[in-house]
Length: 131
View 1 (spheres, one colour):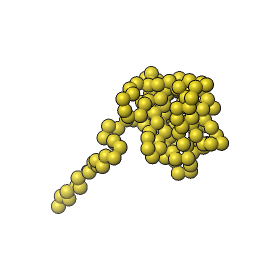
View 2: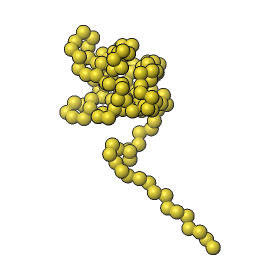
View 3: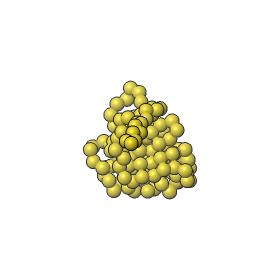
View 4: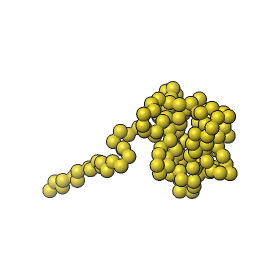
């Protein structure tokens, strides 16, 4: 599988979405990407290290076309042209995931309290017994 997707840059100086040419390499279990078809390889996503793939509210144009790939070092945020492309990419990726990886085609709402490394917990007070 191959095609153009938009990629949200990792933390750093780069901002905004970058359109890149992606290929899904089934034998290597990787997703490779380039600035454009026929240019030098920019990077890879090792699907053997993926812990979660999920549909995402974070996407380029405000449509239902985003998804996230979670690896130990980074969460990759990608956006397709439309929701049907997202579904095709996600289903193709699912076939190559380790058995321990989570997978969800339904969008998960953004939770600002669940930041990486955050240990914030909500405690529910115990009910007092009335005697």
